[in-house]
Amino acid sequence: MSDIIELSSAQKDVIVPKIKSYFEKELDQEIGAFDAEFLLDFFSKEIGGHFYNKGIQDSLDVVNDRVEGIKDSLYVLEKPLY
Image (cartoon, rainbow, N blue to C red; front, top):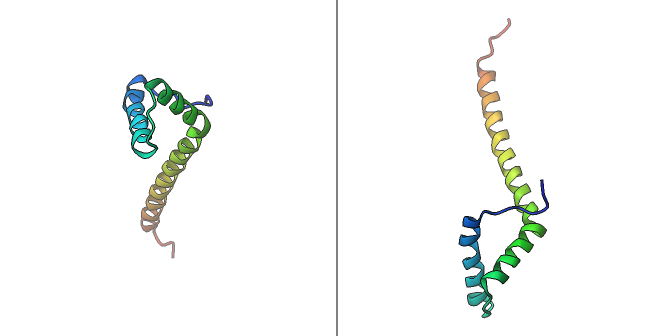
């Protein structure tokens, strides 16, 4: 896995205007698309892995919950031995 989470052009086309809008509304600063994309790449590289790992952990939690449910269902099917 590379250090940066690669985003498609289509994804960047959606995210970059949101970054620009955030800067304008929240920070009262205008930034261009190039600067917004540069910032997006920076955050992807520096903190993207944290979000990726959180998604993996959330997925593992869901899978573990489902497996526990299946295990509980299987115990009900056990036959008494005595």
